[in-house]
Image (cartoon, rainbow, N blue to C red; front, top):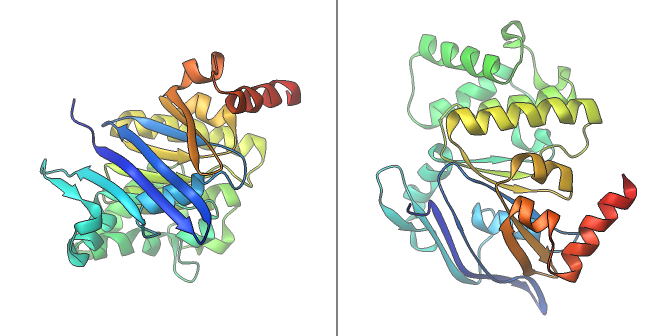
Length: 257
């Protein structure tokens, strides 16, 4: 199977600080890759570099699009790149307020992404918004309510609906369960797992929570000080960690639980 995404020798520095150093991995269609590490390990920087929120210094980001064309993201013309991020890619922020427009309704948040890809029929847009609210378990009667009237968990699910409406193939998630209480986290994780399976999504998921990656991720990448110190199948990495840092991460979870 051809990789959906190939990351080759990606590096990002800030002065003398190597936030990401020589990162390599492949992501395949329908696969969830978890990236874990302590605060400051470089995991969010890596996610933002791949998702084009930050410019990389060296390396390649190679993506195979829906037409089976191989694209070098760094060399992609700006209009083509912008279209890609509005259609085949989606970014789910840790704080849903950063991924939503708080001054327009829930339905308008979803509609905006459809308008960006050229959908103009009001009735069709309304039906699509209703459909995706249902998919993320938000009462469609709330379509004309503003996001600030929603709970944190509902805002995160609305952000998911906004991203999913253009049927992206690749989604970037930065701590999607951060800041939510345990019961809301569990519900959101169940929803994410079912959406990934049913929509055959590929996901890169950054989290500090080992429980989240064990539940969602097929493969795992462990980062420390901008370096990738271990990677492999999630169960293998967590049940038989080889690197001392991974062993430390896993044992701290066991102790805390």
